[in-house]
Image (cartoon, rainbow, N blue to C red; front, side, top):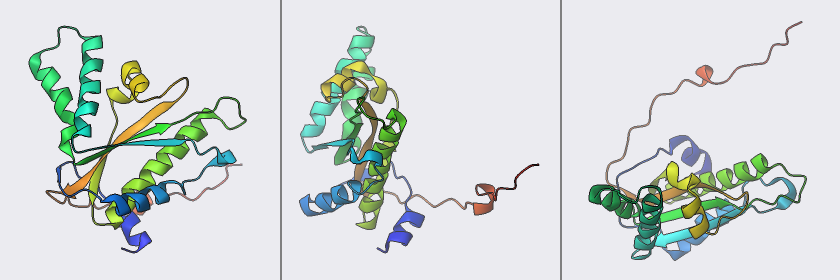
Length: 187
């Protein structure tokens, strides 16, 4: 798929199944991620892939985090956490590895990791896959952060769920003029 077409047609899809990208396709997706804008060339990205049975390990981490917060969590709540990573054949945790001893602001490092995540999503779409970028409480949970190796100012920017769309969602009609404005100085 042509790059501009991939950018203009990507849409999140939550209902995913096999197949996921193969090893070669994953390599292409990560090569695209490594081309994200990166002020200071810090390369502030880390990607952790969970596939097959490895997704159960992520589910265990999410369950542990729930039980740290709520030791009396219901069986249904525990089951929900265990099953979250099973919603797609591939889950990629994207972590902004933040360097404090630099002139580059933390926000720019986090945004760079976000841009790398977006490049992964666009590359997956260009390869014929679908996905959804999930964030929420696990990204900010100290237990999840520690278990995934996020230390200090590091931030989990999201979990990318990738596979084959069970249902292709429609693209919403968006009017560019609703979002883009020409600057007119006020005197």
